[in-house]
Length: 261
Image (cartoon, rainbow, N blue to C red; front, side):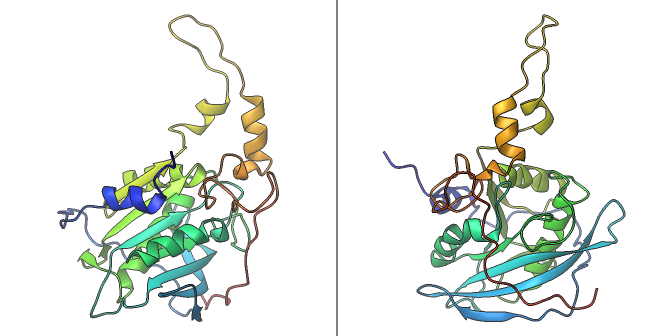
């Protein structure tokens, strides 16, 4: 029996009523000047790709360029706002890994923002393994950007109606972002972990002081670019489904460069 698509899971998870959000609006720290490339993508879906400069790090002042693509239903506009999806890829992947899922969500009426996580593909920065100060804060800045888009429905100023979807590395990001940023309305984390170090490294089992085993095979696949292993139909956990196992994920066509920070 075929498993429901990510879009089907998300349709069930996204609230249909406006949620009461107590958090104040977050100051937008995205670079103001960005050059966009716009072209048709599939039936009834349009896309915009760009390198966005966001500021994160422990003090929130370290710039990093993120390679992004924004998918919109053809009829989305300032007069017909739609809810949004922040769609994260798996370890070793890029925004191209989740392109098919993004197109499906957009075809179902959602605005979808995909991005290549820092340290991968054409994005800048270094990998910090879903650090709250780095990858998670990067994603929070992307929520700021979504809230400023005229086509995106909001719960309040600076607060987009948004769900976060991701598998594996992207699923961990979804969990951490929801814990750190109260603007997140729904999450669909798939095949992920609750503690990456405990998932790979030895630890006591049960009440006896017996060491567990180091998961050498899984750790090797993960850190060796094995985000493709176990990927879903459209590569939510890593590379695209069309790639051979272990192949590096395609970064896709270049996005226009960022404006000044």
